[in-house]
Image (cartoon, rainbow over all chains, first blue to last red; front, side, top):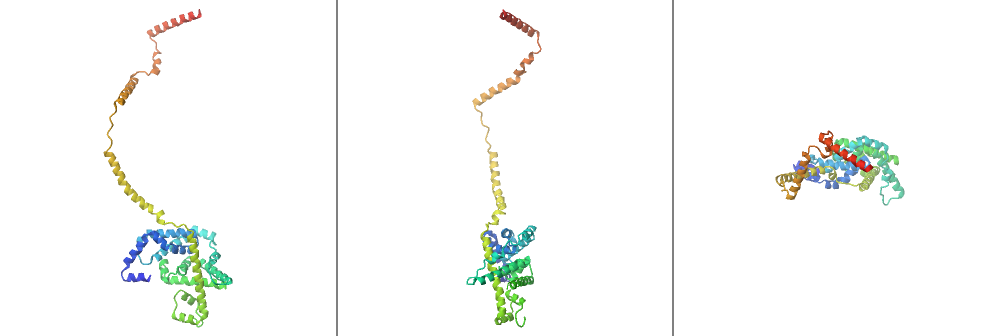
Length: 195
Length: 165
């Protein structure tokens, strides 16, 4: 991101943009490079593997169709995240999703997720405590409002910078920070209850 | 910053990478705050690891296909296909029109049989009454007919007399 901004200031945006558009031209390479990352973000946001697959495919299709509109003012990854965020928002708003969310509220078993925790060299008792804590974190993230959860995932799973998240989600940096503080407060509270 | 410990908000700021030199100094000296921040960071790292693991396990079960090959590529391909094939079709039609085959001369055998057939048709058409309706033309008898009929009856009467004898 910083490198890109340096290019912009140096008036060398066009070659960078051209290179990025060339990358967008080849949809198979684009998918191979960014699919796992976009799918992860969408899956964690929606928690529905089938819907996440559809949204991920749609994200790449739209990106490829709109490649000529890419201005090069952010990285391709951020641009794809922006498209994915819009699609996730649309999916969450759809009445069908709301219905299934209510009908299948525990579709993703937090216990199953916690069971994936690898803690080599730790006693079974300690591992169990860690799993319980992870389950609490998972549940507290799941309970966050949609936008807060997306911001939380982008920061703590995708490890994006706050400014990048703000760009991807069309939010002010201050708003992103506010969402992150609230998310962390929820996680802290859940962990304290598990103590 | 609290005199004794970092507040929850300050700990969160530190985790978000918004630390000030005072925070860093305090964490260097305060084991309790360091443990609290470290615990939070460890749980977030565990959350990330589990999320990545779960996502990868899910992604591996998916049958990914290229969106382009199924949705919008056919439109482009179809347009190019039509654009390529259309001139060829027009050229073939033009060639067919210019080089249409001349009518073939009829063979003598065929012309004879055709003449015979035409003659037969002509005969049939020129007959005033069709053969199936010919008997109906004799319903009204003339004097000749009556004479012919009388002679036939006398012949048949004599035949019957001979037979009865």
